[in-house]
Image 1 (cartoon, rainbow, N blue to C red):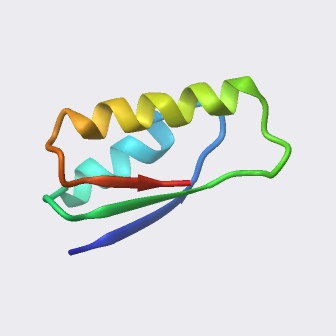
Image 2: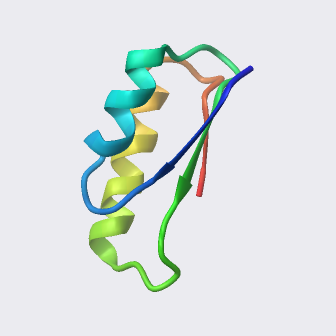
Image 3: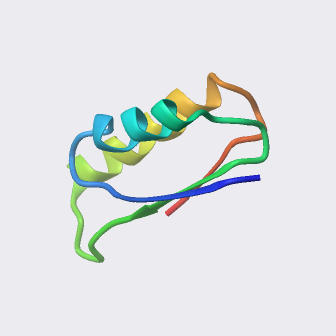
Amino acid sequence: MRTYVSTIGYYETRVVRPVLDHGLNEDDQVVLLRPRNDDEDGDSAVTDVRQIFSEFGPGVEVIV
């Protein structure tokens, strides 16, 4: 199991590209760091990241 930690702003590609460059396996975790006062654009980016990684398999966990 690997854990990826990344900051997230408004664009999911900031998280997705580096993770996919290193590979993604079942039971890997992606930890997203974001500001406490983030707005709806940040929520949208988190939703997009969860959707993209869910397509790789049910075992990938996205934690905010």
